[in-house]
Image (cartoon, rainbow, N blue to C red):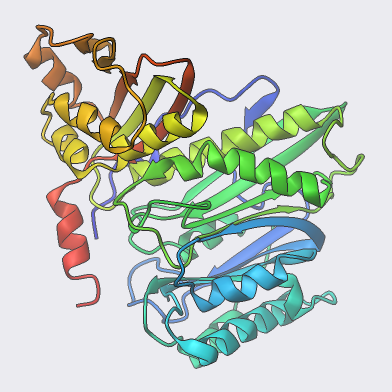
Length: 420
């Protein structure tokens, strides 16, 4: 596993929008009414501070919106959660180390039992059908249910357990990923928290690896679903580490209404503030996931301007972000702008090459054709831990932003011996 670096854990994040305040050391249990806990059950190999099974739950039924992998091979946890997420839920139970994928009907039975174990541990009248379930790790291995049962019974749930839950769901991540914010809406203060994991097998086509979002606002389900999809499409669906889409990708947003107030829905005075907070939380989460890509040393932000429409702008940004040639050039500090031009073209987005422009940071390296530029300065810029690649397609006015990371030899090392 790649060693943790302080830069990954303390990367600078964009400023929150007006009315949104970041909660210091916040987590998914920062909103009112949410509890969590985790233990080491022995699913992962032992190690200092390791946790591998956790529960995140609400003290009351919560409205839930969820998005899942579009990979046609789906883990048992995804299959079960797709059903339970159609109704109000109490929370989610997650294990790491084994993804419970390719395990057939027995795997589904195990996933359903995990939901039952979570309901029992929470108590308070909770029902197994009120829990989502997530499993992440090696494909094609059966869960050691004796360890899962024993471990789940030891989980102690508390309002301070959000950070333990974050540690329990990670695999090759170098550090847990959490964020929480407060936002003011219609004369009331609400909170929103998120926890995520993901380092490899990341090229989302729905949401992302695991991302569980909580809020103490009361929210209409249809509106919650639409708001989540819109936020995800501009954030978690706009990042890539290695071009592979997981069989277990799950993002869920729980709204339990513990802060009181009206039910927020489309057109409600609180809706714009809710959407702004959700979008910010999702963008910060996407950046954290991209920066912590397996073996990564740099965060890459790709901005596409001047595209014909939103669809083409998004396709171009995602393709540049996912390009192995772009990723390796950034790793090697090579200002090879031709790779960006190639990747844009491969996305099938329309581009006017006679009017297009390309920047590495603030350095223009292609300006309506080949131009002379300071290659040493451009190479020096690419040594930064955060790198901006910007392309103007010179067709119309659509824009899109995507995030990724460089590809390093460490990525190969991590994935060449993942199970050995």
